[in-house]
Image (tube, rainbow, N blue to C red; front, side, top):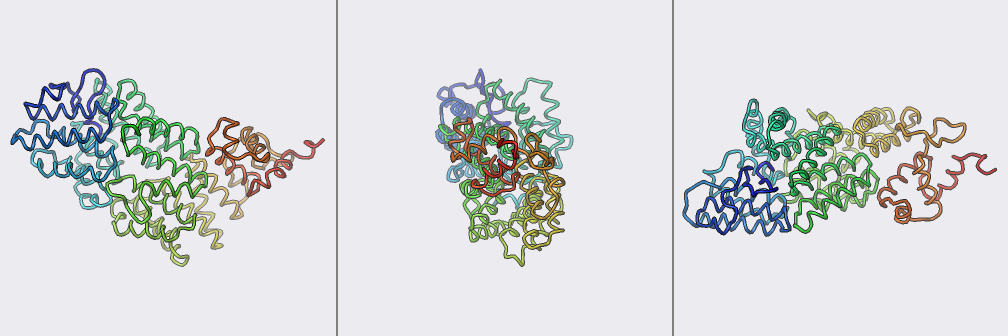
Length: 525
């Protein structure tokens, strides 16, 4: 929906990317339509500068109220004003701020395009309102074939964000990219690439998602679109977290929150929490993962007007189960079912059934896992599907269904390897070893640098791994090791989490003997 943001570099621009006729809101108050355009431009300039989203929201709400009270029947500026208010609400991530927007949509219904009404239902509070408009969303996406209006394409593509219909918008978005690259209209190019990057993340095209996010960020920095930089760093950070590049993820989320916090952009905090949740799950720090996922949407609640709640469903349930919060896990599954999330998309149907299996009593888990994996279209979402397979494989191994466990774990590990999701690949490999599969068949492709003499198939340590392990044996904490090696404590924890199974140990106390065994008897001479 960011196509309607103004061009924020140089001359003030209105929300359609054309020069505003009234650069000063005070000078434009005599004409309601121009006043709305000026207010929209000013709202974005506030955020791109040193203002904050709540102040911008107040300005935009007042401008719309003034227009309503003026008795003017002119539709000029109404779409720009209402859509700007939509963006401000989204960035603020505060449910109470949505009331003026919904009132404006009702008040000016006849003057607003149908796509904005659809976006309101599919995006603003998807857990509660998206299911009712899915037929209209599907019809709108189908209508994009041959569509030439870039704004309409991008508005309809925005309805796919939380309804998981990105693949249906792909062709139209690439058409926007191709056509806009030949012109100077940067804003639609940024928006189309950002939507494609989200598509790539969800559908497992992670390298493409990275390239698109990188290009978007370069364009934003080059053209002064600072307001959108945090959303692109979020996409980059999420990919880094899933791949185990924790220092990169930390640096990106730090930039996100440093810029967004003074502007009270609450959505950036939710986005950072999502990144931290994924990173914590990859490291096996389930207490931290629960903390971050629950901050987005508490256990048993699908937070109002928080679409990100639909992206951390499995995160929260898995973290809850692994930290002994069975009641909270069951409550969250119940909330998903009561909201009818499975009807929204195949991804959500997969996630709901997989979460239910994870939280269910043992005699019910198998059937629920099988239901999850049988979800039509589940293979469109490889990372989510592989996570469910991993959880099912773990459950089967514990139930001593070893042959079945190996099948699920092998499929999960292969997907994680293809994605480059190294922490998850390691988890699956460890489970396969526990299921009795030979190390040479299950082991991820670690660089073989310090293999023990006479043991070419042993899992090696990289030089950095060795440094971390030796400092840990010396009694340093993760924080102290990080300070010594200029790493974050999270990255140190991630390395240790991967080092232990590669040395065949489960605790710090066993590290010294494992390192001595790795070096062999020649080390002592």
